[in-house]
Amino acid sequence: MNNLITPQEAFNAMVAGKNILCRAVGELMDFDDIERFPATIFAKTGYEFCIKLDMIEVAGITFTKPLTLEEIQDGDDVYIVNTYGSTVYIAEFGKQTCHALIESINNGFVQRDCENARRQMQAMCKCLGRESSGDFTAVRLGDEKPKATRKTKAPVVANKNVQITASNDAVEKTSQSSIQITAVDKTVIQEDNLVTFDDAKNRFNHEKSLRDRITAALTIGDLEALLPELQQLHGESGHMIMSQYEQRKKEVKRLEILADLLEIIANAQTPAVANAQIRYARDWTVEQQVPLQKAISKRLCELAPVEHEMPPTLMDRIKSAPDLTTLDILEVDVGARSAEMQPKFMAEIVKRRRVLEGEVA
Image (cartoon, rainbow, N blue to C red):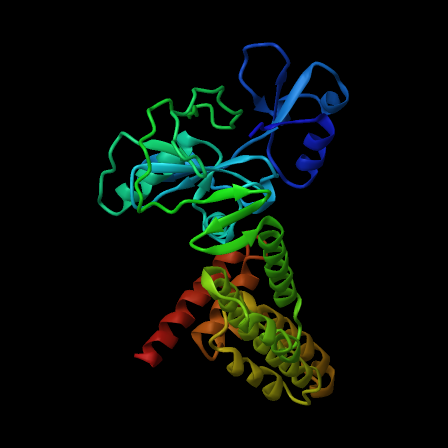
């Protein structure tokens, strides 16, 4: 797959948060970070651009980040990491696309070239305390007699220390037990199941839409309305989406509780009632409790004139913190104070924490 992109594509990718590399056309220099070039480089001629590929290191072995469906176009060759032998399978996306290939991509087992597929396979083995053979073969799915892969020009990559080339090792003939995928007019036959490229693409789009709707759901009712669609999914992607559904359901429930607590705090008639609401969020993270703490502080300030007394200072709140969770949140507030005042507050926090830990013990 050619990693070179046009100046406009490079600019759009940079705006989208991608790391862009650039170099002068025709020169032997390596690609360099776009930050080293003037901002007008996209309007100049004689330069070529590429997206910096993310690298992963596992068990001391470096390889490119596995491909995602969004990065692949029809006609691209993809290289499937094989976990049960020293073989890398090559498939032309679009021509030889099936559910198994889509699942392999979603699960992170598809690379952009042979060398990185081999490296990923070796890293997986080493991570599990195994050593894979240095010899491996590359088989193009659908070939009746696999041919040796040709040595081709390495694609443009981001990591200067990793050289990626296609293997020219001889390709062994696939055994009869191997799964054969034969392309026929964008239709593939895999284990007697007929799957079209459009079917696979439609399934991917439907699953992506379902994930997006789960993320956007704001009520339990919204989530439960998605259950009929979710229950029709199968395989690894179905389990992953169900896990996302359960996590979102927990978060929506927490947000509903938060909304109720904020309403109670806003209408609290005494400081005691406002302060008491924090007990319902003891199992939340410090970050999740921040909105409650801010609401309590605001309500205490509002109640102070009615009580004819000033709201408690940060030092007073530290000294009277009822539990360690409240103390942790107050420590976050200390970080916003001046550097000169922080040591004094922190000393009191340490003192109060010792008292609370002694009470717990």
